[in-house]
Length: 187
Image (cartoon, rainbow, N blue to C red; front, side, top):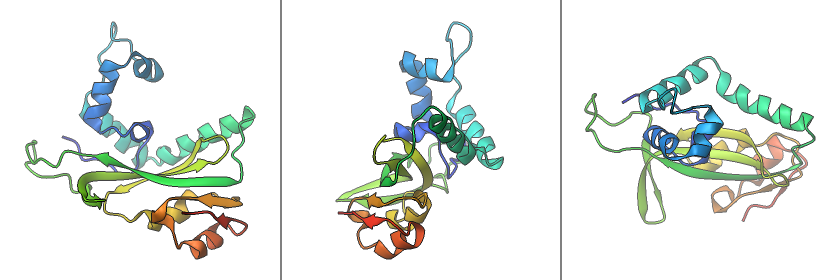
């Protein structure tokens, strides 16, 4: 199995691992249409191919550039990112098993505890426009990275308000440093 990267794309929006993306592409007509796969002409890429593609995007710095290009396109269509940002995180599960070719866990994956439950994988940290609900920023880290440490990367700097859950409480100084006009609305 291919090692997972520390940046992600649309797969994390659905909380899917590489094997989960492969399975979802077989199961969902809408997802196949989105990525342009016709099962009558070609198979769905396997999980290793999906992982290798993500690594290529990361290696050439195209992952963030793609999100930025989409945002510029949307702005050109009249969908403007406003001045409020909602920050949040989701855990992307990964197999903790060592029953793979390398006989070991993926070194880029880590465990974290949420409530009384332990999880193994990565975290997708997102900055979402408060009005349109469009994602303007995405950062993927190992699961053991604290949510608040990624906050500066989730802000675009023009915010007047920032919302987040308890994980972002007490970050007023960070918010002020990276979005000077922003009011801290974290819970």
